[in-house]
Length: 529
Image 1 (cartoon, rainbow, N blue to C red):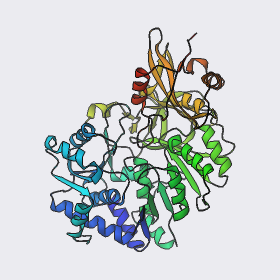
Image 2: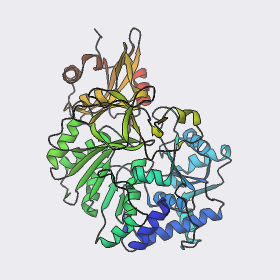
Image 3: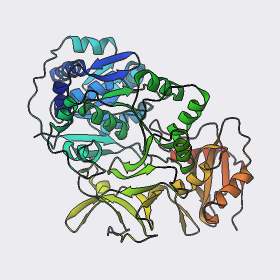
Image 4: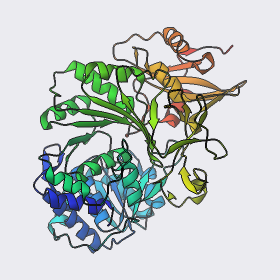
C-alpha cells in the first residue's frame, strides 16, 4: 500500500471519473479531466528534468492550475512548495533559495517579480507562467497516467508563514501528514482508515460527494488538506481565487456548498457582516469550521444563533503538529476566556524541560502531539531540536503554542509562547486579550502586542479595527476588557487602524503590528499602577 497524495487521488479518479472534482470561478473539471491535466503537466515537468525528490514551487492565488501543479508534482514523487502570493522579490528569492526550488509555476501577474529573481537563483531551471505557456505545455504532453510506484515516505513540505521569523519548511512523510491532517485518522473515533482504497470505495458507493469550499489560500496547510481530503473522498472542491465575503455567499448558493472552512475571525467576521447585508440561500450548508487562528467566543455565539442547525467546529493546530484539538461550538459553550477544545488521544502539554504536564486544572504548558508528526524543519536541524522531544520512547512535537488544562477535561488555548508579553514578570498571552477585546460589540478585529517599557520590560498594547460605522470609545473598551481578564493583562496603549495586520492566510502579522505601533502615536495611554 502507498498512502501518498497522488495515489489516494488517483483511486478516487478511478472510482468516480465523471463526478465534478474542482470548481474555480467559471471553470468546472470532473475527476477524469483533472487527472489528465495533472498527468500532462507531470510529463512536461519530467521532460524538463524534474524527478523524484526535486522541489517545485507554486506562486499563485487559488486556481485550477495551482491545485493541478500540486497533484502533478506528487505524481512524480517530487515535492510541492507553495509560495505566499503576497511576497515581493526578496521574499520570493528567499523561498526559492531556502527550499531549493528547481521549477516554479507562477501566476502571470507575478511575472515581473519572477524575472527579477532569475539571475540570482541559479537552482531555478524551469519557470512556467500560468496562461498561454502553461496551456501549451499541457497540450504538448500525454494525458496518460504512466508513472512509477510511490512510497509512504515520499516527502511533503509545508512552509510556515514566518510569524516568528523567516518562513521555515516543515517536512512530513506523506502517510504521516495524511494521518495528521488529511483524514487518515478519524479524529472523533480515533479509528484509522484501513487501506488506501477505503475512501475511494466509499465514494463509489455514495450517490454524491460533499461540496467543500476551503476559503483560505492554498499556501495554508489547512486549505491544502481540506482540498485533498475532499478529492480523496470523491467530493467537489470549490476554490475562491481571492477572499470576498459577499462572493463566498454567492458561491455557497450557486454551487450548493456543504462545508466552509475559514481562518478564524479574519474571515468569519466579514462573512457574518456580509450575510446580514445580503439575501443568500445557504440551505445546502451543514458544516462550518474555523482553524489556525482565533475564532472568538462572541463571534462563535453569533454564528450559533444565526445558524442553529450548522455543525460548527473550532480546530487548533499548526503546520508542525497537525490538528491538536477540536471543539464543537454550541449555544451552551462558555469560552469567554479563550478558545477551549478537547485534546485528541495523541495530544498533551509539556513543561519547559520537555516533560509531560499532569492534566490538573490550571496547569499550563506547551501543546504537543505524538504519533504521526513531522520529520523536522528543512535544512534547519538546530531549530528542529527546539520543538521535538522524546518522552518514554515516543516522539513529540511542541511548536510553541501554550494552553491550560481546565476542570472539565478541556484545554484553553493561550497563544504562541514566542509572542507572549512579559510585563513586570507577568506573562500575558496575546490571544487571551484579543478574545476579551473582540467580545466588545464595536471591535471588528484586534491584535495584542508587547511594546518596550522602561520599568516593566514590556507593556501590553492593542491595535484595533473598529466595526464599520461604530464610534469607538477607548475608555469603554478598557473597562470592558478589565471586566473579563485580570487588570495586568489589559492593554496600556491603543492604536486604531482601518484594517488589522494579517497574512493572506488570515493569521496575525504581529511584526507588522509592532512596526505600526513604533511608527505612530497611540490613541490612548493608560498608566500602569
